[in-house]
Image (tube, rainbow over all chains, first blue to last red; front, side):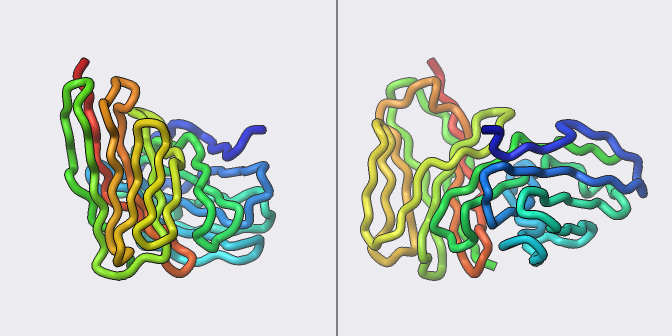
Length: 114
Length: 109
């Protein structure tokens, strides 16, 4: 039982480059989301999905795209990396998006943009 | 979005002392969740509170939800070095979970 798997664990990008952070879960969870964590600012929601084919924006969506073609996968795309996107990114999933179930988090991707 | 304010930002205690972190909202919450993140790790779900005035315990941890459902607290009795980490509250609102900024607990042996 792998839970939520994020790849890569570490990444260094140059300004302007694009990349995709991968997230996969094997718990048949409907709800998936991406957060970024910056020192002193807690976890801020980037995008979320309540099911395959359905995505919506969170608090800080600019510069990021998502898609949800399957229940298992929820990749996060950085379109043109900027130093302000240096952060730790967490993918999380929950059985449903009703707020009645806790999140399971992946181990995170530490991204540095130079 | 849903704002949840968490205090204090940092807490340093001697092992054996108690610790409390508070989560406050200006609006009524439908529920609140608590998470723990160890240094270098990822957040781990601890508990969810739903009912007004609810109190739940997990060994040395006591979680409370305010009567007005606008605030919550996490109290740790007799801290241990294994309690080190950052504790987050999270409030749910319209398909989104909003996290507080967290309280970083350091326990000195």
